Length: 245
Image (tube, rainbow, N blue to C red; front, side, top):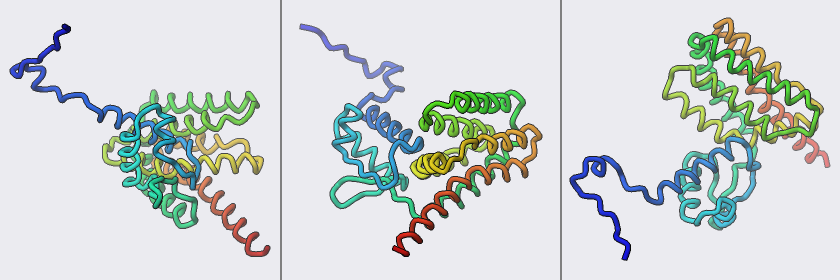
C-alpha cells in the first residue's frame, strides 16, 4: 500500500501555510469573469447562467456561483429571479453615474501620476501608442479584443504611477462596471465611420511628458467621456425615433 505523507504539527513551514482547497478554483473563476467583464466580453443585458459559465470554464457550478455572488455585490452583475444573472443594461442614468465617478477618481489618479511618472514610464505608454498605430495600419478587420486590451493597458500603466493604493481598486471597480458599455461604444464608433481615436491618448502622453497635471486631467476627461457621450446620443436618438413611430 502507498503511504500517505504526514506533516508533523511542529513543522515550522506547516505552521505558516494554509491548506490549499477549493478557494483556489473560486478565485481563478472570479478573476476570469472579472477580466471578461472589464474587457467587455459580455454585452449589456446579456443573461448568464451558472451552468453555461461552468461548462465554458470547465469547472463545477459551486465556484461559478460564488464568483457571481461577488460580482453582484460589486454591481458588475444583476441577479434575476430565475437564479440566472445578467450584465446590467445600458441606461442614461447608469452611464451618467459611471462617467461622473470615473471623471472624479481617474482624473485624480492621472493628476497624481503626472508629477510622478519617470521618462521610462512615459516611454512605455508611448510604445503602446506605436502598437495602436501598427494595428490601424494593417487595415484588417477591426480587432476589438486587441483594442480593448491596449486601451486598458495604456490607462492602468498610468494609474499605477499615481502612488495611491486606495485609488487603484476603486478604478478597477469602475472599469468592471464600464466594460460592457465601452465595447458597445467601440462597435458604434466603427459603424459611424470613426477611425482614429488614438489622438486622445496622444494628448494624454503629451501632458504627462510635460508633467502638466491639469492638462493630463483634461485630456483624460475628454478621452473617457467620448464613448459615454456617444452612447448617450445614440440612445436618445433611438428613443426619439421610437417615439415618432
